[in-house]
Image 1 (cartoon, rainbow, N blue to C red):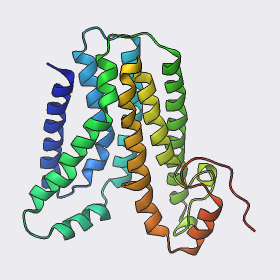
Image 2: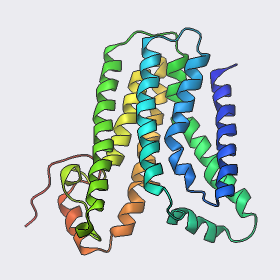
Image 3: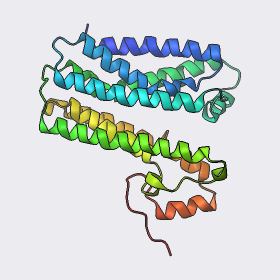
Length: 258
């Protein structure tokens, strides 16, 4: 089977089953936990169905597995035994009582499936390629992945430990990696996807697939990541002061504010 068609069908089944589970649990937010694993499924499916997978294909699948499983664990543990996330509660309110389940299937689960497919195209391409040796760009991709993984994993851990302290209740996290960028985890996510793309890269024919990390970065910067958190805190004076001295996305030394 064509790997692009096979991956699309696999994702359709995966997100449909996830939708059914979410309706049983009455919690559409579980889709967040399975965002990372959807890419692991893409990588594993294309690796298993590839004709002659080699070092590069196995490496690509391994780094995707490392990222996706850590993200799954972190998000699932964070949301365990908590009410449905406010974003999905607000969606339910906007949808009203007319066909809410159908709207959830289309606007949450199918949409996530489409985005997963589009963003995951370099993984399909990389694991389906007959080039298995590593080039200089592939090594650059490994380095970018390592940087991104560090920022996402360490940023998440720092925030988690900060929130554990009762004395920090209601306060902003502004130290550690959070002093270099207001969103170290989202910067890390972007860097990792550029890393995945470069690891999958085997020649000029792969240039169009750069839209994958670009799309992910645009989503983080303008749709589902940064804007939601910035909007949540924009009226707080401590956040305004923090924003004046701290880079929004790319890590930079804090500005000196008089």
